[in-house]
Length: 185
Image (tube, rainbow, N blue to C red):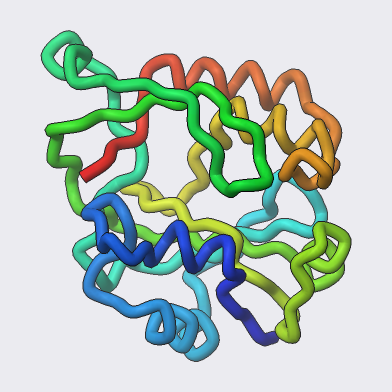
């Protein structure tokens, strides 16, 4: 099985500005090599048959993705309308500024099959393409951000995957993200 970083993931996980909320202490090339050389601790099924998450112990100083919202940090939440690419419509996002989350115990690369990426207009030569990565304390997936679930349901033309909305999964995601936010360093 071969794995490659998609251009979408490369830009988000290894940005030129080297922000602290991205993957640390590792180049995109070294990350890709490690995913191909090291077996994951376990493989999780993703939200659709074409999606898998590989669980790896964190070998970097990358910090957790999601942080609990508390009364002591709520004032550090920020929000704005943003798009992930020039082609996508901006959506409302929120994040923390000025916090220092713990170093993650696990990295969970999110993989899409070659067939799905071709369907989305992003063909790859490998069997699987990394489209994102979660940085977590536990070796488990955290819920997808609700707006990502909605974008996926809108279809490929709007930057999604075309997977219909699962209302129960959406409600679980809302329950999680009402009490958590990503951060930016």
